[in-house]
Amino acid sequence: GAGVSQTPSNKVTEKGKYVELRCDPISGHTALYWYRQSLGQGPEFLIYFQGTGAADDSGLPNDRFFAVRPEGSVSTLKIQRTERGDSAVYLCASSSGDTPNTEAFFGQGTRLTVV
Amino acid sequence: TQLLEQSPQFLSIQEGENLTVYCNSSSVFSSLQWYRQEPGEGPVLLVTVVTGGEVKKLKRLTFQFGDARKDSSLHITAAQPGDTGLYLCAGDRGSTLGRLYFGRGTQLTVWP
Image (cartoon, rainbow over all chains, first blue to last red; front, side, top):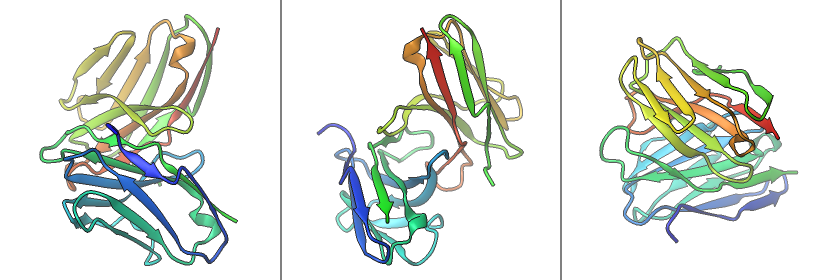
């Protein structure tokens, strides 16, 4: 497709379980971002990839959160030992990312609910 | 603590009214962006302002970046029901390329 694709759209998991959220960026986009949007809040930065490497992971809340982008395209956000506080919409965005103010395009998000 | 404070948080108005949404910070940003987000969708970029004092117009929407590059406003003239949505401001501090700091958003509802 032409846009950023995130799967699944919705994920319900039990507390303590492991989850993976996938992001397919726009083809050719080298920059990829993960954000988390809690209810009633704006998106909060988690991690930024430039190519295959995580250039800034300072937004990851703790070591239960990890993200990879092994081939510089698809990215997976992994959450171990999920907690109810992890419930949120996880947004992925991509951009051509080689200069400031390059437009980033967001996916529709994955709504994660931890019960 | 939000780096960008947006106000008001909720706005409910009648079709044809004008409105202004504010985005304020004590920090300086290299650019400020405004997004609109619909339920179940990701944010969609409306505009990017880069220069202090810059004013950009997009049909009935007017965006302004403060002279000190710490604040911005979005003004909508003659609002229409199709303007309903969550409006988010986001700032780039110029540190990590493309990393954005978002406000909490303004939920706008325009009644016919």
